[in-house]
Length: 238
Image 1 (cartoon, helix red, strand yellow):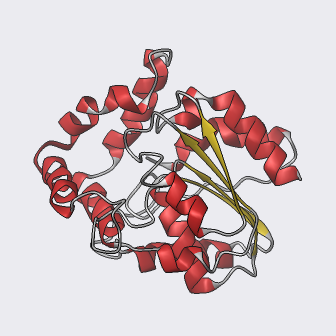
Image 2 (cartoon, helix red, strand yellow):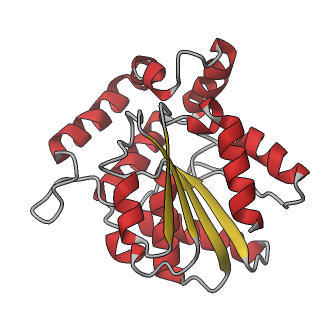
């Protein structure tokens, strides 16, 4: 997705008096699509570059999905001094690949198979997985708006970014996060299942509060928009 996904959060929080900055991950949206740099360390350094270029200090980080892993690596790699609070919506990670020390992950072969599908027919994969991303009550125009954003991302970029997430293990970074952290996660999330991802993030960050939304999927920022916006405003204002 591009930064346009945050349109309704930006509108709400801007009206509440916040300065909102939405940037596009490399290869997505308005950003250039370089040949490389799609590893978790470089993506974390990109966050640092944005913060440095805009001279941000005491700012809040609000993330979704893979952005949770990127933010964790950013804080673990660059420190927490410049950050005030962290909010993660449906975070993906902290270690997706199953291993001897990670029973919560998915088999690497299954994760790699998804990348194979993206490389073969990315638009079909998006359509096949469209329904679980939303709820039956989500309007078709809203769904198409987000699907259109996904389709603007080049398939090689999407595959490289997901490979970075598969290869990443940000569990050590979570222990370094000493800022108030809010995690919003749905119990119907098919992309980043609550028990595998959200609860693992909450267990790894000592200052984390996990709020579970009943019936919410991965696209909770639109399917549960009002609740998400209220919870973000309350957390960031407190």
